[in-house]
Image 1: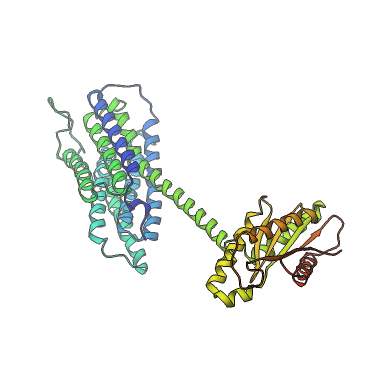
Image 2 (image 1 turned 30 degrees about the vertical axis):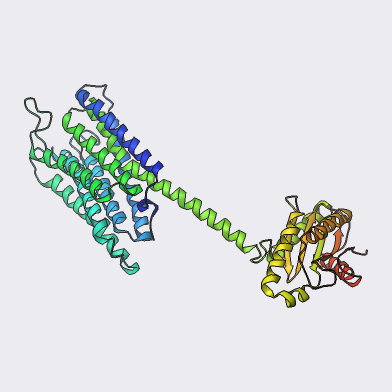
Length: 453
C-alpha cells in the first residue's frame, strides 16, 4: 500500500515546495548579514520555541509511526525515529538550559549540558534523515511483512530514541568540555571541529535528500524543506551565538519550522484520507441502494424509504401516492430476443420512468423482475394519474420493438393514494396499487387504472 507522501508529486505541489524553499533561502540571505544585530530581549521566547518543537516533533513521530504501520514503508518509520530523537533532544536541552527552570538547569546538568544537547539535536536530526533516505532505497524492494511491523517499529523509531537517551546521559553526566569555541578573527563560524561536523551533517542531509529522492515525491520535496530549515537554524546559530540577536531569533523560528512543515503535510494527508473515506462511504451507500441493472433505486431502498414517507404522510396529514408499473408481455420479449436484450429493455424503461420523476422527494425503484414502483409524497390521486400517464407515454416513445401484437414495448400502471384520515397500512396501499395494476392488465394493458375505494 502506497502512502500519499510517497506518490509522484504533481506540478502544483512541486511549484508550492519550490516557492517555499526560495522563501527560506531569501530569509536566510537577508538574516545572515544582520545576524549579530541585537534585538529587544524576550525571555519566554526560547522556552516557547523549545516546547513548540517538542510538541510538533512528537506529533510528527506519532503520525509517521501510524503511517509506517499502515503502509509498511521503512522510510516513514525511519523519519518517525528522526523526529522522536528531535523531541527527546529538545526536551532535555530545555530542561538543562540554565535559567529556565533553575539557575543551573534540571537533572543535575553541568554548565555545558544544554549546549551539547543543542549540538546533538542539530547534528542528530540530519544524521537520522540521511539514514532514512538510505533506508528507503535499500529496503523498498523488500516489503516488510505484517508480522514484522512491530519489530521494525522498535528498530526504526526506538533505535534513535535509545541513541538520544544515551547522548542525554553523556551530555549531562559526561563532564564535557565547552561544546563550541567562539569565532576568532574575521571568521564568522566557531573555530571548532564540533561546529563544522554539525554543519556538515546538515549540508550532507540536503545533498542526499536531493540525490536519492530527486524531488519526485511529495515526501522528497517537503523533507528537503525540513532539512533546509534545519540547515538555516544551525548556520544562523553558528554565525550569531549571542542570545536575542537577529540570527538567534530567526534560527529559533526555523527550528520550529523544521518539524512543523512535516506535521502540516501529515495532517493534510489525514484530511485527504478522510475525504477519500467519505467519498468511498457515499459510493458504497449509493451502490447499496441502487439496482445493479437499471441504476435506479432497488427494492431494499423502496421498503425502507416508502415506510418513512408513509409515516410522514400520516403524521402531517398529507397525501401519499403509489404507482405500481409492469412491462407488458415482458416474458414474450425475453423469449423472442434473449435475456441480454431483455436487460437492455429493463434499463431503458427504468430510465424513461426516472425521467418523469422530477421533485426531490419523488423516487422510482425497481420492485421486482419487470415491475417498478413510483412513490409520490404530497400528491393526490389525480396527480399520480398524470405522472403514470406521462410514464406510459415516455415508454411508448422508446419505440422498443416487441413480438406482441401492439408492436412495441408498453407498460400498465395502477395508482393508489393514502390521504388524511385514511386507515390504510403501508402494505394495504401497496395492495391497492397492485389491484389497480391487475385491472389495467386484465382490460387490455398499456393503460393506467386507479385504485377503487
